Length: 292
Image (cartoon, rainbow, N blue to C red; front, side, top):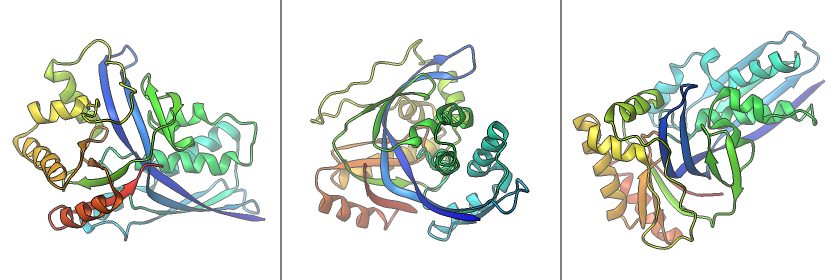
């Protein structure tokens, strides 16, 4: 018997991200607001119960991404892909041995701070977890990455700890434009830069959960570090990206996660569409999307 699934794996932005000092376990404490986006990858998963080989095959389709970002993803070995790691971790914890054939249609670029890999991993866990209704998926997701537990559901959440402590909240839908410059940002390198900057507090500042009114009360501690301590080209590009979003009419603009994607919040859908069309003439990846 074969079961086939199609599941969308949404991206996210960090509307707010405060970072504390490095903990004894090597992680940093954070205080953040995660918003899931309509921008998504799609996973087509076939579960073959007639084949108990325990084999996981993964096929990557990155044709919808700009060439330079598709090339970056295609260079990742299948066993290093988080969707593959999620399947293998699930097998280890449950003994699940049905063969899996995963086709991963990528629309979320890597190294962008948009959580694409974590979302793909959570989607695999949700599909496989559907065969074990009593199974707790959160511990498995947390073992795969700090962002992964968020993607077991959609919507918005106040996030703390190293990212695994979630409090689901209502957040009014936002009209967004997301852009990514040509370079990617490695999370480990971003945290190393944060640590070496000497500005890290012992505890991250509390999340400002107030209604959406100008001025927006949100910040991203990585953005400050990038603009003050990043490489000259990095500083220039981030400043240029934020200025471009504001000049296109954004009410608020920031970087997502540890970069390199930036986003702008727009008041009206048509305004966001016009802004995206304008920004596409200069930036390699621009998408108009909503928080969901």
